[in-house]
Image (tube, rainbow, N blue to C red; front, side, top):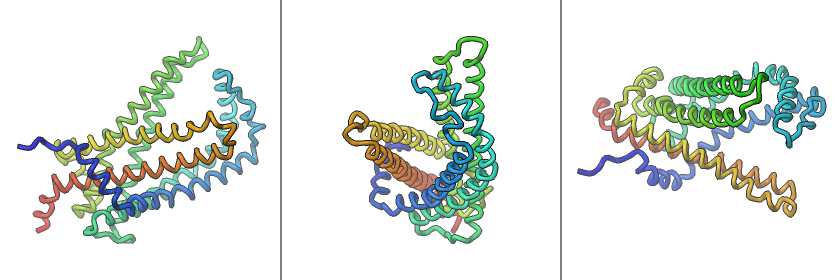
Length: 308
């Protein structure tokens, strides 16, 4: 009897399959950048407006001492106290608008990628399925925000217990907890987000409602769920590796900064950033393909029999 197939053993083949179909990655990049580029343009315009009201010199940002981290931390805190009301006023309306925009664009974009990957799917850009997809994307965003909120509150607790005015700050302890909690919450999200990621596939592949898909995503069985968790964890590691690789690419020319010049360094940094985003989108499609293949392995025949 053949040994059971591990979730990651098929990833190489799926990477080749997606690489041979660049239109899938281009479609994934397109819908993400259709949302991201206008949002960055809006943020840049609003930031310039805030800096026009409160310039960097007035906020003390230009006077930050990079040689003394404790002094710099106090200077950054004082500067942030000046800018925080302006930033909070903008985020009060920008954050909900951006969230609604991401939900709408990602619902259409993710459905289009799945339709391209599985031509037999029923997909209409203005149909009821898109509204249901928006519900599932909203659930995914809420889960991500809840994880980030938990990380933020945990870091606040670490700061309150390790950096106090009563004694000398425990910088080592704070750094250890910062790294531990950051990696911990990152791993936690990789462990639990598969249920929110597989729900849109169940809705489209099995023609379920949004609420039924969310409920079914938690009742897939140990074998199927284990494969999804394994793929999610590996893709989380891959994303960390891409971040490190992008940092290395952007930092490699620094010893030659005098010969290259500032503009060339900025250009190389931009290229490294674009590389990270494109590579990350490519692996998002690979993960999606992996989810579809394991759905076909564990539930495809069952769904076909129920349809007949």
